[in-house]
Length: 172
Image (cartoon, rainbow, N blue to C red; front, side, top):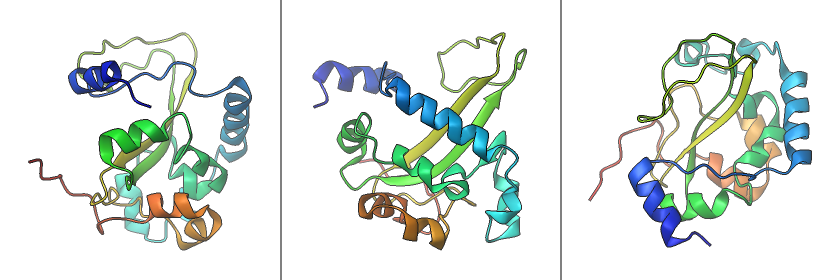
């Protein structure tokens, strides 16, 4: 259950930091998957070569297509209640990437109001973005048919685009 305080924080910040959302064994398993998928050729994932222009590949865009075991992040029990609360129970996948931020990286900030904080070690970030039911994926992030066939029914619903491509939602 999402608390009123969490809803308020999300409203003013635009995000929530869910401390301890993943158990240590889950983190270890995801890090193992990262290692296994290093160096994966993005050309083998993209069904349309022009899609690569929309992907950052730092080091792997479309990680769920690269390894369907990452799909567990689509409906993880620690995040699913928040996604349902803020986006509706029929929320959809927009994109997913595996980012490495190397020591000394002076890149941009992920959220406004969060100061940059370069680290002495490489930071590994798994990103899965979601939208409301009518959201479509970012260009180049429509899941492969093989991926859709390999996930659970709930994950398939999340991955199935509500629109063919992303469009800004109409807020009322």
